[in-house]
Length: 516
Image (cartoon, rainbow, N blue to C red; front, side, top):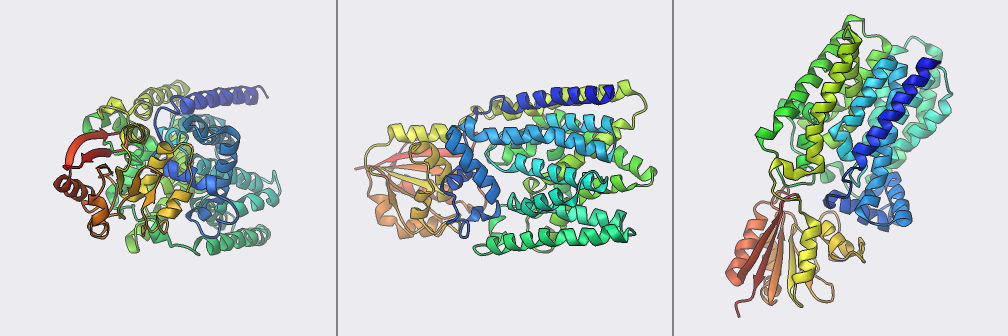
């Protein structure tokens, strides 16, 4: 009894630590595209749009964000708070799951590793579904383990796993993992297998409903255009992201790159995590891969294997953000490896070393200027510059036009709405056909990589204004030199007045004025 109370006091202390890490500097960075798009979508989200919008694939998340925004407003701090909450609540869930799969020592270690995880902190500071995915897969696994231990009925498990697909498609990996685990560890228990098969029928019916809604408007290939075909090196980068996160939060939504000199400590973390991952796996093999070890191994490897093989055979859908459902299993295996050290004081020493070394990649999250990007400026500062300096009848050209989403969030804070995007064109496929006039300025821009076609179509309108504010995002995928082409085009027809860069989001702002 005393050991249980002591353990939960430690878990509470770890949760407080997790909250501090996730709330620190929460509003220091402005929103990037994915975050602003989530806000825009959530504000307009209702039952009328669920059948015809890209957000259909994650309706529960957008309903949560919509309700939260109505209650607490649209500040960056407020919008990111749900991710903080889910990130903190994931800690006791992992502790409980690890206690059922292994023991309390592994549970405390894995809870600590998730607490200090730079990748978990990163997703807990984003207006996005990352921390909700981690929370959801842990809750599903908690219900699954309780059911296996006969501590609860199948009903809570069936209900939650039925709706988990509506949280995010990648959450359905946990259903596949659990089915494969049951098949491997309880296949000889005919009564359990019969009950299990019956329990999966409503879950897969919910999946079919989600599939019907989702594929009414676009395909998987269309929404993963930005992913790159994986190779063996990509698997190592995935482990690096799980261990220190630097690749993920330096390039996901940001234009800055982390120089090699700043990767020394993060890669030392990779060596330590990787070493104990291997040691944990070897220890499980040595002990005969008992059923709970099988669950953890499948949980970690299966999503990575599915996305890797699919991306190699068909088209790329491989991205770390789609694999974070495996992150808790990664820490379970690493924690198990640490727990196999003979002496307790050495286990504590390793844990403390990991905490200290993790402070470096965490500092990159909190203050990216530490890795040499110069200044932590992005869409917030860019939009303010245009709003204050743009003269009447000057045009605003955004390349690619999709970046109007974060721009508009800060440019028109009183009109943060998706209606503008609907007026500009045909939505996700960026078949933009219109020019939007906000009462003072014409706003326009090309589709991804289509600057030449854009200029040919709007040549007369592009040459007529007294000035042009050109916003270029050169780090976006499939640009095909669109930004450089537009800079050259306007340089030939206008006089370049100023150039400013906003390095955190990799955006450049050019101001051209008429030569007449």
